[in-house]
Image (cartoon, rainbow, N blue to C red):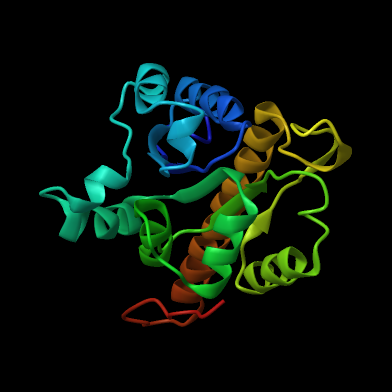
Length: 213
């Protein structure tokens, strides 16, 4: 069974030409057995459509319009409680800044605030933006909170410049996701094993001890 089987993955897509890669990533995740709910920002819709993601995941894709729908008061909370992983790919400098400072002005960022799962970010931006001190400070804040930053790669950018800013390829992102989930599974199995050992270590113990890791 795939490590991704029945995992609930929130896939955030922001405004970047790399949005077409996000569709490929969504397809790969779904083929691996994951339940993929895509959330597109308004800027992302300039490059890709919700229908694209619905077509490859067989699940509804969400946009900012849903933030004001009948489910608005519970939608982001539901995402936050049920998601196993929040992946934002591509993630622009603007969204990175919003995440770092706790801003929540669209469905994706408000869902990120409500999320109780790990956050994976695959940055994508044009020349000079990734290396800018403001972007680096924002990424450092997110890393301190436990966010996993993968990429970006160096290469030809949309502006015609060459530099660091290309979103890494979907297959590589998928590998990072598999690795992270596998580590989480091993950690959980280790905790369960420790609890079992603890419960049998003390004769007459009526319950298992609790551990803080």
